[in-house]
Length: 173
Image 1: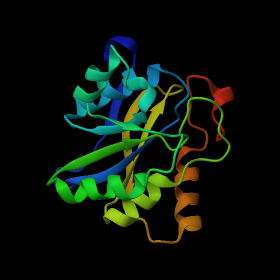
Image 2: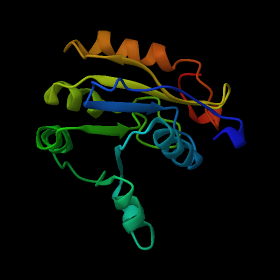
Image 3: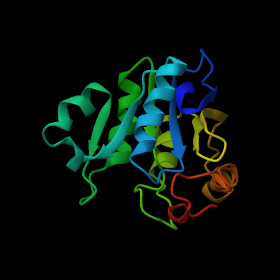
Image 4: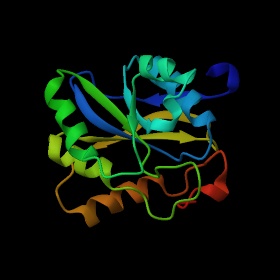
């Protein structure tokens, strides 16, 4: 990452074995590459949610090997319950979710990451891909209280002003 001028910052404390890792802004396919490199640099084995269409040949096997979990965005699949149950099945689990749910401009972020963390009783780690500062990593961890509006304000305030690869596609500039 240093060759590209990026710095990996923060991390997840060694004693925190489970959490939902939210990463934003997400406006480019390069976010995946930089994010994966940051996780490798931090020594974290993460899983991530990604649309099922990406699992077609030849990417499917690679994505699964990297920790990809396919998501069918076209139907109600009880994804919150499914992912929350994964936390019960593992001693250590970090699941990365992009709350925007797409690389396109999305003024209304998805709420699933919040409800997964709440249901699984795990904290939320706020990760960044900041193209302005060329920083990637995790800067803040908090435990959701159940007051969605109050907690979501923390999330939005944290990401407001971060540098997206394509700023016109990020709603919190």
